[in-house]
Length: 102
Image (cartoon, rainbow, N blue to C red; front, side, top):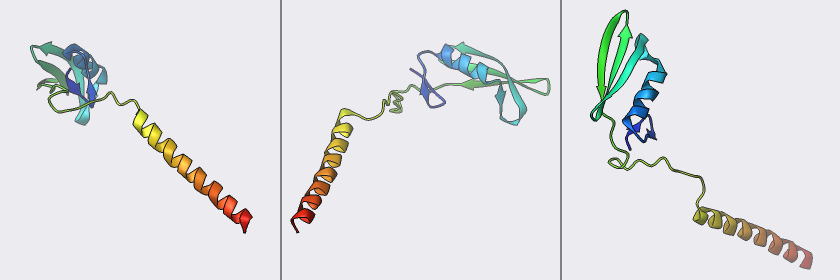
């Protein structure tokens, strides 16, 4: 799974499609075409009627330890938050009981 723009794609073709849908690069370049060649993506950008070709070789997500499968709180996080909330409520209840006793 190659990495591009902070997202792990299934194939290089998906990245090429994403680059081509970007349309504009900074400084006035317009993406004309993006094609896959072996392990690279060749981007054809046009500026003022001149074509510029760029070769991009996206790294594999596993090579750099990138993981975009974050799904929010884990079970451990949820249990920890529940425990802390319970502790706060128990402390408030204890303070209420002590206040009534005085």
